[in-house]
Length: 326
Ligand code: MTE
Image (cartoon, rainbow, N blue to C red; front, side, top):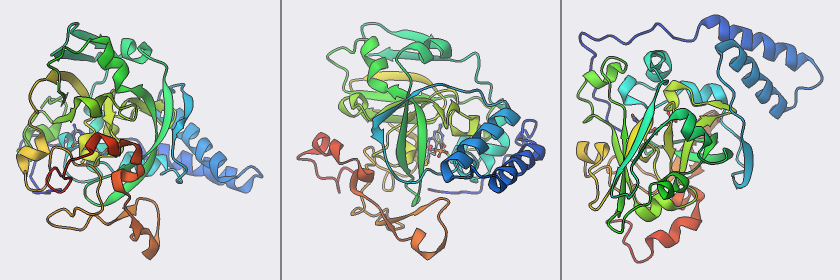
């Protein structure tokens, strides 16, 4: 993506809620104690480190049933990597910025409004959203358009649950997702790096596909702010920028919505943005990816899969030229 090195001018990022170093250190001690014990299997260590982290940070637990139909077998990215290497331009353009500055985001109270081409527009608070459908844990691959990827255990449910509730009219052909853009809480919104609010969109059938996830948590907890708290989208067969964070509005529309990255660089970021190893970004290849947390030469050679490996979505695009509709 573009990195115009914009400065924050008069609005330096708030550092009031950066995770204290003791938290990381107590976590490291805990890991060390575990490692010398007899129960240091990889998954137990990961689970325990997550527990220690949650206890130390106060990260609120979120119970969910694993849905095996939506679990990829790849090794999961560590919680630390997934929460410290982020794209969330409302909090700055460097990967480390969101973890450092998103503490200023107030995620409660929070409402999300669903409106537009619907029979029953609705505004819901987070508690109602948490109860709208049974929470599932799903392990998805996330492929960023920049060429890196992660594997994340999200918590949420199919977006279709929410869309059905508002009863789309026959005119609803697209869904627009609008993120919060509040200069007081989000230092990056003072810059002109993108047009705010961050806006994304899907075609109605894409939005209704069971893989399209409305996420409220990850790694057994509510979403950390830097990952898009309190509610975000996850569309695993598309480049990560399609998955809007910290959503406040969902609008069903007749016409294809304009989207932030498309407005910023239409030749580089199309409306569809399906993961496609055969269609390169104008400035780099999309044939392979770097899995965050994997070291060495081989990590850069991981082949990118068509639709990020989610071949079940292929029928949504039958008859379409995916080079043209990038
Ligand atoms: N949503 C908002 N509102 N603002 C953003 O800058 N970045 C996108 C997407 N959603 C972004 C966003 C990009 S480019 C990616 S790759 C993913 O969020 C990254 O999600 P993660 O930081 O949780 O891995």
